[in-house]
Length: 283
Image (cartoon, rainbow, N blue to C red; front, side, top):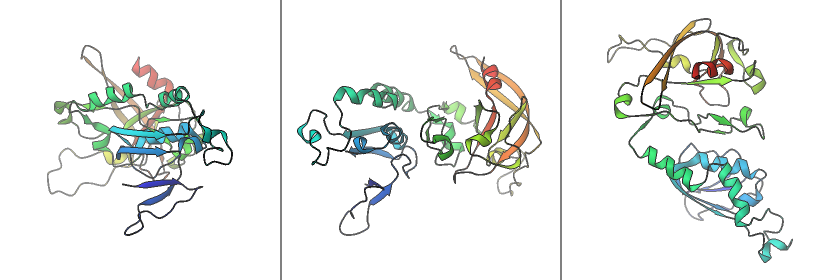
């Protein structure tokens, strides 16, 4: 059990005896890994948050697939919310109907989470989690509050494998379509090459080279050093599953024009490709 309090507010030591379990946190960037908690109590934090939307997204990120979240807020029609002299006077009280839109936007609807739990409980393997050591791997970043440069995101895209497919999994990464010409505008820098994306090129994250291995390697043999991908041409096989179960594959060649530096203290396993090319491959 952990007690987290906003850094602007401060916190009291808890419990009184033994190791403290209270932490000061930024409510828009909780210092916890994804899917950590199966029970979360949010007590009068939503109405005091600078960005309730961002706080809810962070709660969604750290909640396990089967988590239960209890949110306590001041009622707009309550007497305490109407008086400035009470603890709830300066905050942002809600009515039940006012709570519904932000919860829906933050993917908190019970129907959404229930549907997700049904899929996860089928015994499928999360390919991203078993191939990536990074604690924070996201596929969506909000446009507010500098979410991209701060890496305040959530993962709404998942690759779930059947047991048969999981047995064939050798490595992985994410191919992300970038709708901008220069990734430097998103606060990243290149360790090698450039951050500018052109047709037929890709930029790779700092950890992508670690996905390459020698298939001839035998147990006990020392693995070779990761290859230098800069200015190399990658052969990328894209796979698409149709509704009838048919698998469509497409081989793509692209030259690596940049290798990113490790940013935000998080390993980057992504391959960045121009967005219009990703859309064309998905067509």
